[in-house]
Length: 422
Image 1 (cartoon, rainbow, N blue to C red):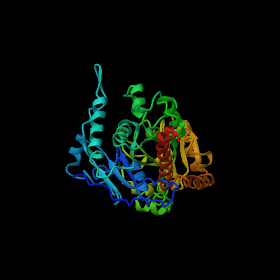
Image 2 (image 1 turned 45 degrees about the vertical axis):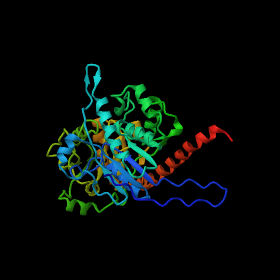
Image 3 (image 1 turned 90 degrees about the vertical axis):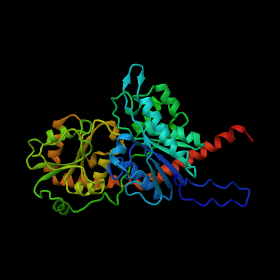
Image 4 (image 1 turned 60 degrees about the vertical axis):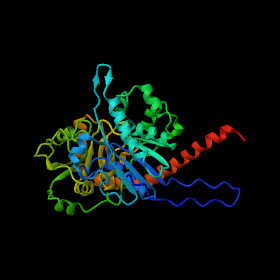
């Protein structure tokens, strides 16, 4: 039996003819394909941070995280309902789903079957909740976002979609839309109450690719938990993690793949005396051992310590939504070297570091060397980065999103009554 969320006292009715303001959003269901578990503690940490921040605003959160059959076998019997470190206001459900990937077999694309199974798994939870949520919020367009909108409509509740897909200006479509017929995608999201875009670039793509009205899109760049990501003593962090005290250390956090640019970072470090990398993450490319003083995954709580052990942060991404890793580095007071692409426009100013073309290894090497050789510039950029990170607080982001959702909910409720006239 699925347990219902904590009961919330009803709003006190007004004793006059003045309309009572609608209560704020109290119960929210999240639909996501990524969420941390004991077996995979680093999957979907950015989703969990938002859920925890929303719960911190007093909202009861239900997380629906459909678990693929192959992941269920890896999990064993662990963690099918509980999340990783979630609080009392958060309940996590992991219904089984079948993934047939995204392959074209004659006239059939297997993604349609994968999406249908995901959607059914979501409804097995939403349809059995003892209390219907005030709204449903899906993370990424497919499959979670489309399933969230479909489920919200069946519940008679507002539905919202978070759009944080990585994207660069030269791409034709958002990657989560590539397996879906454009007209089908427009139909799937026509009933969405609103869209949370993490950048102005993604807002524009929603308008052009899905014909979403600008009034239904809120732009909320990602946020950082600044109680965890904050400056620490560099020497102390190096001693704690066994890192050399006499080398210039460049931090990289992200997937070890071509999109994030880890190989370009190692190429840029080649030939730079006394420079080495702290590489946090995993993926198909492995940095050369002679360049890496640290390499591998760590619990998210330890990422801040490794960042604070570094001198600069580098992330020459080819595509991003809104870079959590870069924001976390700035919140730790690190100067940054990042791509000069449009997807970074909402986050970075020139005084926080150096922006370079993502594929220009020479420019990347020069930027690292310049910050290495100019301590005054490095310290000034670090101070500016710390100041720039302050507005991107995860708790303020959660509060802003909730208030924006409340406004759109109120507008949605008002539209039918307005159409009926006096």
